[in-house]
Image (tube, rainbow, N blue to C red):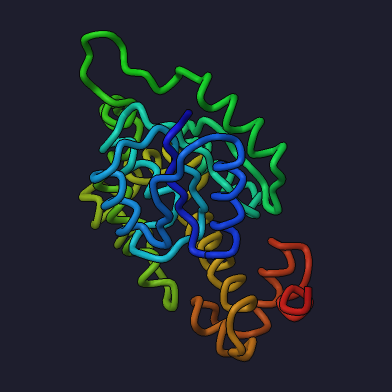
Length: 249
């Protein structure tokens, strides 16, 4: 029997997942709807596996949170549960080296399969006598950003999406030259800083389109596009449909 932590801000989805895990004879130690609550639960509870949604409330999204949770518990199994399958998101998820990935809407069979494979996966075990988590080892690699820099950058970008974000200010935040920062960023995320920021703008626009009644013009301004026309063009190129059609889906 595994002790599971659910990190999901949609309580209906979280309860469905909890019911499936209990039916499969596993224990759910808690449900966290934001990153702060998840960190507290992991520090207070003995957890074997965390089911993590990518879009959650709090200062960290699910990917950033996964890095941090692995730092607290190097043996923790991480399974992402999400509806996001765009290439930049998959690149970020893969950088965590998760033990599983489940697409929403999930079924009991998909949860059972992912859970069984995750618990059998020993990739995250530290080498004997090393005393270091995979996150620490990764941060020591010369061509990657460390966790603290990643966390600072992602928090900064999320708070600045409504305006232009220059490469120089991101490089300054990381205390690096622009060229050095760009190389490390690309190595860490699999995409350039510009592409990452653009992806975050589109993801935030998706959230606003789904969950608010703001006009398209207001949303374009809130996520840093110079005009609604520019927003429409980039959104359609990235997502495949216009923002208006996305809102109606």
